[in-house]
Each structure stands twice: as structure tokens, then as C-alpha cells.
Amino acid sequence: MSSFPKLPNHDKLNSSNYATWRSNTIATARFMNLWRILDGKESTPDKAKDLAAYNNYQLRKDQAIALLELTVENEQRIHFTAELSKEHPSAMWTALENAHRQKKPAQRFNAYEKLFSMQKTDDESLTQFAGCIKASLIDIQALRDSGFTLESLDDELASMALLKGLPTEKYSNLRTSLLMTTKLSMSDLVQALALEEANTNQSASDLAQRAFVKPINAKASKASKQCTFCGRNGHELSQCFDMKNASKKRKEELKNNKGKGKQEEAKAVEDATAEFAGNT
Image (tube, rainbow, N blue to C red; front, top):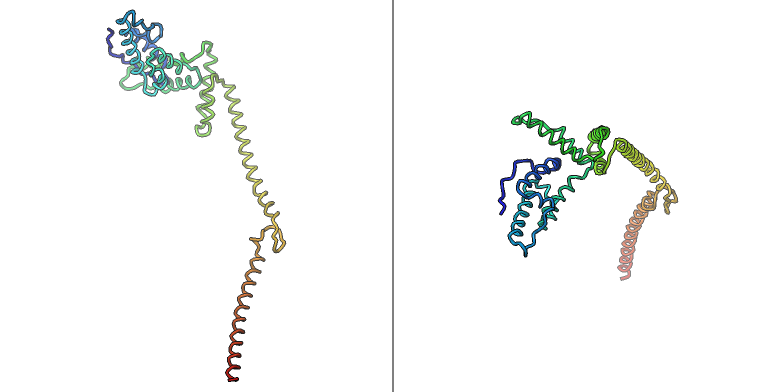
């Protein structure tokens, strides 16, 4: 029965160290007699023919699964969630490889960024720091295509410098879409930026034109209105001051006439009363 030795003290898999992690994990798996399971070259023994071999294989398979789970950062486990549920260590290994061996500009640029931002710590020797630099370089090399040349490196570094120099808020979406392409050259990048600039300028021009046309249309619309009361253009009946003044004047006339009518009615009553009193 296999024992489970202490795991080696090397960096867990993150977004930019796949090459060195892979090398260290293969060495660990070989030391633990698990590599052929991870590599998918060892098949499951026939349980009916050899129960002991079958049980031993199942234990080693569990160890291989644990090895992968314990040597990756938590955010990297998402890559093999489906395979883990099926307890399939070789599929987990392949899933990690597929996720990190996508040779796209984004992966290489992240690796370059890590390389150029590395700093020696106080408790780190120069030899150790140099080893970290070499390990980071191995990660970059693993992300290159087979036909990668010195000219390719020059072009890629120029592209990276150009993208890093763009204002983040304005060009964030463009940068993301460009980095997700399978191949990115300096000439392609310049063309994409020129097109983006042309589209931005056109959008600004269209916006200014719409802002200029809107007041003109508003004036034309206002001029096309005609009041049905006074017959003049530029306003509707509800906005006509002549109509409002005429309405106010009419109300005052009606009010005055009403008061005058009451006075005449009172006078008539008074006269009738006096006449009745005289007759009696």
C-alpha cells in the first residue's frame, strides 16, 4: 500500500507560473509513484482478476487527485471542477494544461509583467533571486509558439509597451479584446487603435451635430404652431394671452351684470311693497 509522503515546498499554481509548477509537480508525482496515473498511461486494474491491485490503484488515484488540489491556488481549482466531481485525475491534469497553455498575448503579457516587476526581498540571497528570475523566464518561454524569433520578441515588447501606455478608463475594453486574440502584432495594434480613434471622433462629431440640429428643429416646430383664437403663429390656444385677457374681461362683465341685476330686483320689490301698502 502506498504511503502519502510530505508534499515538497514549491510554489502553488497561479496565473503566471504554470511551466515551473508543471515541472515541480511531475517530479513530485514520479517520486510518489503517481505520474503514470496523472499522465493517463496507467489503466484501472480488473477488480475481478486482482482485487489487491485494484484497491492499491484506487488509493493512488485518490493521492493523485489530492496532489493537484493541494498544489494549486484556490482560484485555479475552477479549471478542474467538473473533472474532480468525476474523480478523474488525468482529466484534471489535462484541464489545467488546456487552461494555462493557451498561447495568447494576454498570458505572455502577464508573464512579462511578472518578470519585470520582480524585486529581491531582504531575506533572499542573490542566488535565490536569480533562480526566481530564471523560473519566470521559463514560464514565458513555455507560452511561446515554436516559430518564435527575436523579431517576434521585439514586436511583442513594443505591443506590450503601447497597450500599457493607454489610459485604462478610456481603452479598457479595447485592450481586453486585443489581448484575447491568438496573435497580436505591432502593425495590427496600430491599425486597431487608428480605427478606434476614428470611430471615437465620428461619434463626437455626430453628437455635436445632433446637439446643433435639435434647437433648430425646436424653433421650426414652434413657428409651425397657429392659435385658433387670435390667428397668429408661434403658440397654441392654451398659450394665447389674448384669449386669457378676453376670458378675464368677460368674467368681470358677468360679475358686474350680476350685481346690477340684484340691485334692480331689490328696487322692484321695494316699489311693489309700497304700492300694495297704498292700496290698502
